[in-house]
Length: 156
Image (cartoon, rainbow, N blue to C red):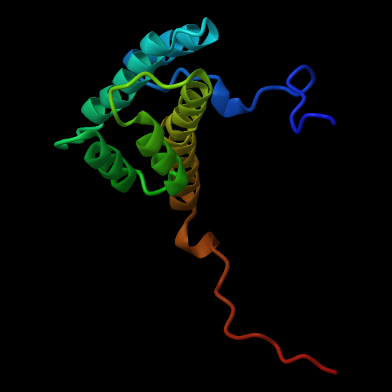
């Protein structure tokens, strides 16, 4: 049976490469976590990815009493991010025990998806809207097409 994803031929999804727009402190911790995971160092990898998540709380101004509350607050601050991603981060990232390697890799990948949606897609949306806003503001009122007064009745 063929695997669902052929990692030898398929390019990695874009979100798996941590973009330069993700804050440096978070990027470094994610790289450390990945390095640990690739060498099956679950203690170091688990610690690094959890630190990366807490670093996002700090940088995003999320104040919470515990990890779960922090994840919930981060999700509320970024409603454009798929809620399921935050649920997975909460489920796998909470606690102090080292994760099994497969769970660690799943948490790292999921958190990369969160970071991608927060810092890359969010920024691209803002850039798109700013550009379109400038274009529309540059139009003079008389250059704008008139609003249609109604829809013509179809002849049938």
